[in-house]
Length: 320
Image 1: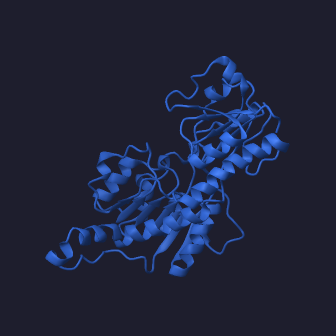
Image 2: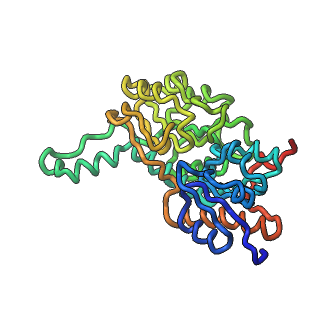
Image 3: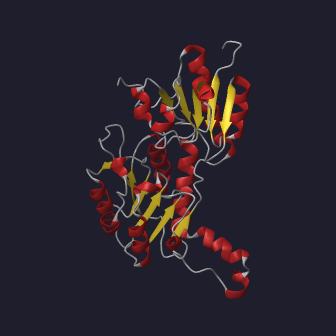
């Protein structure tokens, strides 16, 4: 890098480790949430890079005439208009792989919590009810003998599948294209997958094609013994259909780590005893988030040093 530091915009919040490393390497302009692009034209003209936590719409990109690269903190980058960036020759990166294991581990934990109601059992103990009321009620569900369907079999989906194998469950999957490198049973459609399994785990990203595809028909196909787990994106679920399915025992239980309008949760979720919820923590460990932060910064440093990008997303760049 030259002595004159390159200017990088951080619109809103950013992981402290990333911010510390960015500040050491670049001239960082950080703006407050809600005022992300409230900058003078002179400052906007200086910005060559952006480090963001999944927010960079087209109109923001258009306000930065000399922007070259956007580094996103997170695997999902649906809040970054990567296609629009590509038409302007701007690269976008994300943080895949470094969180695969953490998310897969959390998925298995959420599945077990949902089936065996372990958080409810711990609360029962902590409230002193074990001594006063006797043993905690037997859980109606078990992981034993289940048939798990994975909606999505990318990097994280494969790690989840590998972790499921020792549990001796049957594994099926649905993706847009059948994979030849896995031993699991392929379902040609989501509805076919739901009909064939009793446990459905969604690991799909937010795209127009995945919007609310977990609907009443899919949940009905999953059946009365069915368990639904979502660690992908909340926008893939029709919340009203899920609430109705859980209330009327169309399915047996669900476990969610992601929601449609985070951190706002539908009021109807809180009264459902057969729903286990986590506040989007699948990758939320210090080691994993530090690795994600480093990848954000390393992408920016590599680009401005010699044009190297470690993890560019496939949409960019494209010619307009």
